[in-house]
Length: 553
Image (cartoon, rainbow, N blue to C red; front, side, top):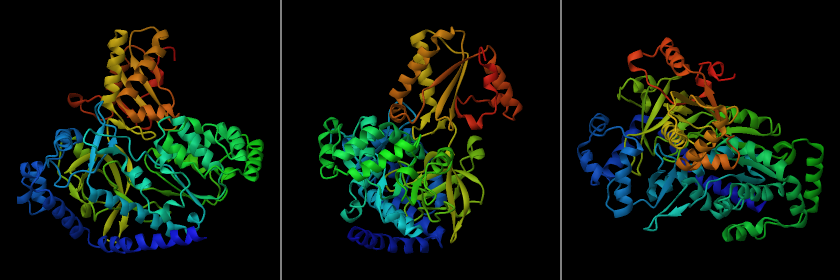
């Protein structure tokens, strides 16, 4: 009761004021966006990038679009590295205090700079999101809160600046009154071994019956946790009965220390769990945690398939609430309607630009501002942040779903062309190209054609390979490509290791399959002279009958 009172007080103190301010800002998006852009450019006009792009002479959005190019992370990599290693103010006047690490388009990870002010903004976003969800259903916050997070710190550069996850950092530095409500200590998420990490998480979760709130960015994580609860259940029930954890000796010291006082013997809960696992062929979240009221996760884009599967595992009392548009670079929206998932852009903190996918693909770079968006239309997002990302093309597509006040609301639809993201791995076309090249060098082949499809429903990738080779070598080729992808993309490795992604399947194609695919695309409307092969796509977006070209199929 005391914990709930403190939590409620914290929600009101940290959320009510920012929410009132955001509602006011949403009534005047033009003024809000102009103010944000002016502040970002003013703060960084004396940086290397600011001087190169004449920030001091920019007086309007038209000036900004004319002086500053649209860029990718690779365009900024040298600026980021120079500021990191020399301290020269290349992108921001304020020095970054940490870097968010994520998958890049090359084999090298992306390091996204985050200044102190950015962390304060994201802390405010987290508090505001929790406040909004608290208002959606206060009963969801009466019991224990179970959130999955990334490691706060994955390492440090030579100058001592850490890199890791901004959301993980904020989770690890929550106010004590809020942290007391959360079930899993932040130290657990720094466990490097995925199997051990999930086993530790479930040791804590299974011992607590009164979990009312569950949070994970990707619903595939939660589906996987439910399956692992059934796999690990019998052994963990014995631990719960004794108040022990057989795997504790394997934990890093900080994680083991964080479990002190949390491993109490509970014969009553152990008996209840034995009955649940005994009568259910596959126990669900509803069986194990019947008090669940809210699950906060992504529900849009390719996460919709996993979200539907998750829905079947929950008690009837539990609602799935959209987590909002969120990336390593910034938080793009806050969910303002728990039922519809409407997302209000964070227009008071970042400067947004948008461009229609069809215009982008034809080479146009004429953008729209936030207030110019049309309902029902899809747009690529171009973002400017206080941490040094200026007109940054993030390769995300969002859809305009409605309006909150005078501001359009948005929902994430998918990554752009050449990128797939089934369960958080963010696999780039360049990763696939390099991995196939590695296999080609190792086995001495040059494929006539290949294309990889990401199957969201199956949580797996299929590589169709037109190659004059023996069928017996397929498994070896698949293993080689998987190894290369894991080396190029840490997140792919992590998702395969944890079982959230199924093994890669390589299928040999009949001769002429690639030409048949090209002809199919041209019949679909692509101009023959401008035909571009996209080697990585979603299975749901590719209507070519590849299976009919599989050798032996």
